Image 1: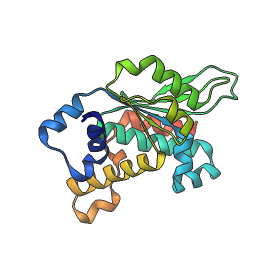
Image 2: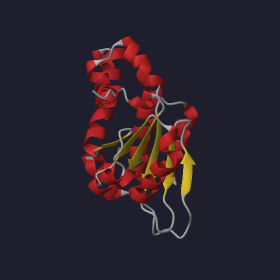
Image 3: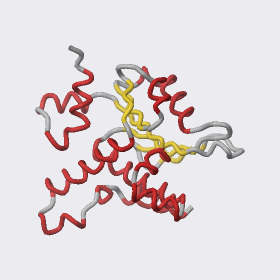
Length: 199
């Protein structure tokens, strides 16, 4: 039986079910990256979707904040890719923290095409590449035992589970409601997120 799918299931559920210490060490030694189609995830979240109708940049900033917090907690590299293919400029990258980059696609590129190209060029550099997208055709394009598509809905559930885990583990019930994953971020990262929101 292949071990990789088992590891993937444990990675997604580890904040809920826990893992054996030796397996936990093995998982965190693996080199992983998550590639996120930003607008797909925004449209899959009622809260982010409401923000989108009010202000695109605000919705993007809130998603980046959630992902930056989650990546920092999980110690996993992350790329958040937003469609900007009508822009006359090349791809634009912003380094939010040591683990997270935001990419605005350049002229003629969608988030899907950026992700496909990234996977093709970098798949041998990582043990696992998680692709967060609702685009089923792309899911078929990147089929590989080390490339693991995940729906935006399931990814949002994983973020929610991580927040719940931290609240229950580190904070008493009386103050749980005021705690967020982003509270773990450093001052410099928070300033970059604020700049992104206001740009």
